Length: 473
Image 1 (cartoon, one colour):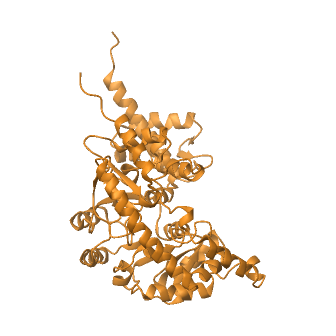
Image 2: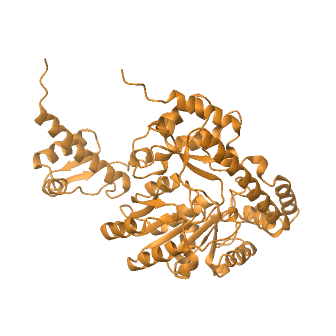
Image 3: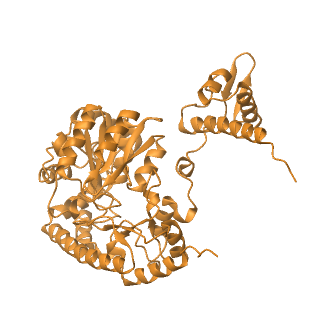
């Protein structure tokens, strides 16, 4: 029988800890090529290991060609920085339920694959004829609209139109506080470039939209989650989190929280903003589902008066995902820095997309389209709700709009296992833990009611049966 040397095993794991720490700091930019590593004694104290453990780890990194030893000077990073690998920065997930893979699979597969886990409306719900008319009208316009770079802030008539629409939601913004981007995702990335430095702590809702997590990881943020309730974030948990972690930023959703479909109560918003102000935090409020709301509720940007809240949106969900146009509404003191960064990273934004979307918004048909989509979603929510309950799932809340339902599987069923079984049956689901930084949603699935025809529930029940735990012998 082989005897395991536990002391040697522990020492090997400590060496691995030091190596992983060095690689992580290089990957995130804390140690750039040519930078001197912490001294052996300093590293040993910081990681609570012995000096000999650090020596062993540094020697292994030297042998791997990742650092170099300079006699009498110390150890230095050599070569190029390791590329950012988002999978290494999040919880370990199998590929079938990794959020980036789920997105890729949803985008790459055809209509033969069921996609109740995706986050967009079916193509035949979009105003295709109105888009064609707007494109033809732009094609007949001045050539500059088809070929030229746009102004730094973006197409001026579109910014003025957005300022008027924002006023309908009590967000008072001058057109010069509106910065156009190529999409809502591009807007979020630009704001993270502006506000987040590697190692900064950022608070998110738990659960939250999984691409919030991916984007923050790409910028080297330290992510802390606060439990979300049907009325908004848990304020006691939020207060304790900001006290312990002193975060720089809070990233959240406006109406129809993704993935739960919840909308924060005004009283929660007021108290939340008080905590944010008291701890000198900034806020990014992603409001890409605003047009799905028939009766607008207050936003943090309205309560705050755009002092510390950045409000962003886009038109991909309601009008077109192909015609990319997003926007940021920013506090005045941040506009110059935001525009400079936009010029440095993208040089501009797609003026043609802004012109086409501007035509769609100016046409009275857009409002009729929005009303029709809201009514269609209301019917789909009711039908999906009944089918989920009939399949044995329970709803976490009752959203009053939007496209998502957040549902708990019965008994001990795992959303990961059900999603894996569904994938084998030709259906893409969205398991709860891909939305949860704390991995607290293992029994939940997010359903897009617009992508949930009756066939979805036939496959779901088969996947649930295939995932039932085996009875004990």
